[in-house]
Length: 315
Image 1 (cartoon, rainbow, N blue to C red):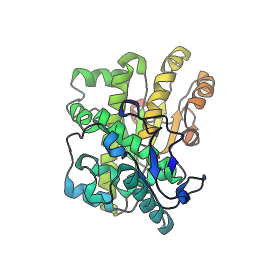
Image 2 (image 1 turned 180 degrees about the horizontal axis):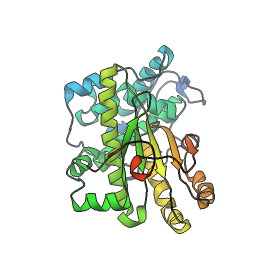
Image 3 (image 1 turned 180 degrees about the vertical axis):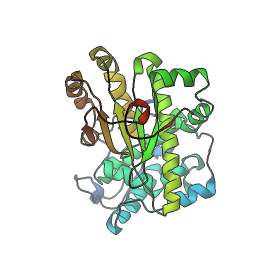
Image 4 (image 1 turned 60 degrees about the horizontal axis):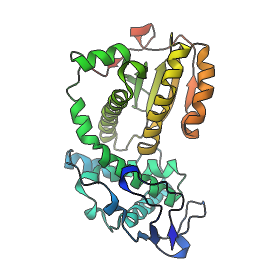
């Protein structure tokens, strides 16, 4: 019998720390990708999750998305996806897709499982733990309801005007794979962390929807988006004030939406950004840090003197 020894719990959802897999001794995680056959939790994690939330998706569309092969995967990785799926089923105490709760069905597509597998380098026990914790966050936060609340936030509303002034963020163009490019001028201080995080998650949600549309057209599921942070005229005081809230927000994304970032470009950064970056790097996952590139000042959307057109996210 093996345990989730490294578990730090689910926050409001209880803890896996004292729960155990009832599986063969061969399923002990030795650090490699192959952990043997998946076991089941003695107390299934499904019983430890928050209550179900309202399902909010087009079933036919979601079924098509769930069966699309992720971009840049081969037969070996597709097999790993199905192995991870069985580990997750085992942890939840279910045996097939028919038993997946309706509200969680959109999270069980190949494109979702592959991101969690890659995030943990296909160490199945760790990836399973991360995936189940994401399910807990998804229900606790009630992401679909939060996203519905933001649907009516546009550039003419009070909230929209505040965001446009202090946190202009949106998409401009796509990369050569068809994946969208985010543009952001972050300033957590002026709008508060909770509003910043919810607004950012909503725009991520919109971006994921656009990725899904492109994926359905192509017949393979795109996984990533790109982010451009514009740091022009950002002062040292402002950088330090935003440091920890921003790191917390990135951690929320890394924990619950891993492997969504393809690249992050920091443009027009002042000299003080170098010092701030040294403080920020230890707060971020190594995989996230590796995707960050700091560019020169002559880059960005046309609205700010750069060469690229963009579509504001709040319009």
